[in-house]
Amino acid sequence: MGCKFDSKSPLIAVPVSASSLDAVEEEVAQAAASGADLVEWRLDYLDIDPTDELVHQLGAGLRKTHGLPVLVTVRTEDEGGHYRGSNASYRKAIRLAAQWADLVDVEAGQSGAEELIAEISDITCVVASFHDFTASPSAGITQKLLSHMQDMGAGVGKVAWMVRNADDLALIQRLQEWAVKNLPMPTVIIGMGELGQPSRLGASAQRSAFTFARGVQASAPGQPTIAEIRDSLEQI
Image 1: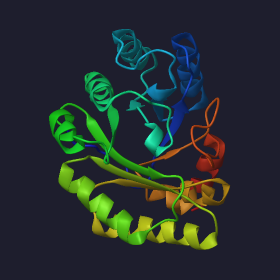
Image 2: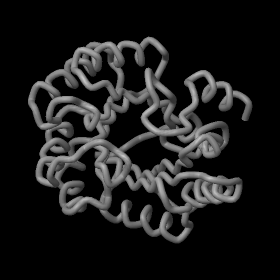
Image 3: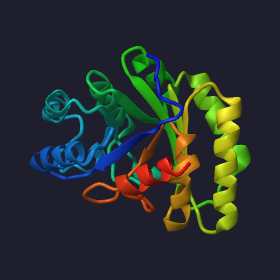
């Protein structure tokens, strides 16, 4: 399934990371009211298993109620998330989400990721992702990862690094420019942490398929507000 984005107006995604299904309903309603373009539902924060059918029934219902596109993410502990389940359970949760969600995140480093992407890419937009909270940004690794994600059949390639200094931020912004010029696949290249916040704003945001704003609670360090993102885009 193709993933179409306006190159001049990135979607602003708001994370929903509540632990209970009742709280998820409240956070999605708040995201819709706040003017978000997209909801990222982090299933790894739930206090019930993300393979439970109740999870996906609720997701499909909320999507219909609010008319807001949904990106489903099951972020593993290896990449900074909370999911501790088996690889088989991870794949099951992703398959269930693909039946109703507009976009589904698949960690490119997961065993069987290529086969999973091939299986679901006809029915949803697949966001292949990679996150590293410890290493400094790498141009070589990022370029290889994004090229590999594209070869895997992903609709969007997402790479996130922790930013510790101005050089890290500058490298990430150069990588954003490289991706726009060299890859037909839309990308999201993010610098995490407070020093990485400029990579989510202004011209940097405009180079991305979507960018992340802070919701009820931030799902990653350095997320600005929706208003901050929109203001930065208007100033370009």
